Length: 136
Image 1 (cartoon, rainbow, N blue to C red):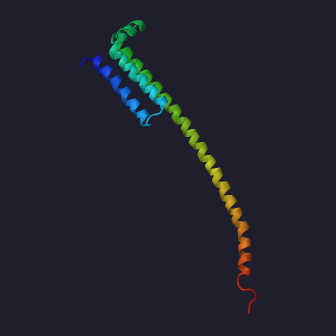
Image 2 (cartoon, rainbow, N blue to C red):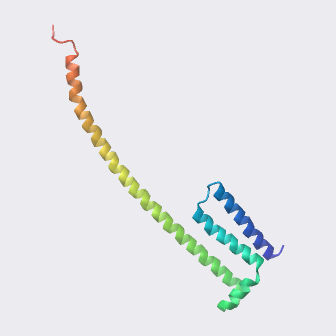
Image 3 (tube, helix red, strand yellow):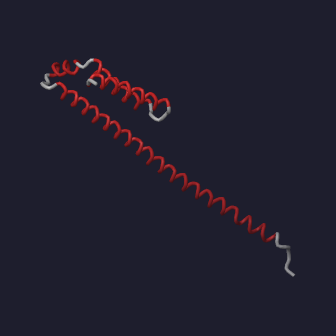
């Protein structure tokens, strides 16, 4: 197999897997868009292998496949940055929710204590009158 056919098959295969994962609700739409872009890039390189040479000449790179490696590396770094931003955002939300839950639990405990405090005197009065009245 030639590298072009391999790249094209990788692009198509990746696209099919991504679409299957989205359909099974295992991959969110934004992430799927990223991976479909990767698949389209692999397919484009497979269908138009001279595009790498053209881009290399355009940017003045002597060895065009190295430009492809640099582009992929930059894309991976950007993807990692996007993941870190998302994780940070989720951690912040989780921390805020934990704080809100702690506040709500504290309020619930104080309300329960207040209800029990009100109910205890009523129970003791009902308990005294229900013992049978006078001693003897």
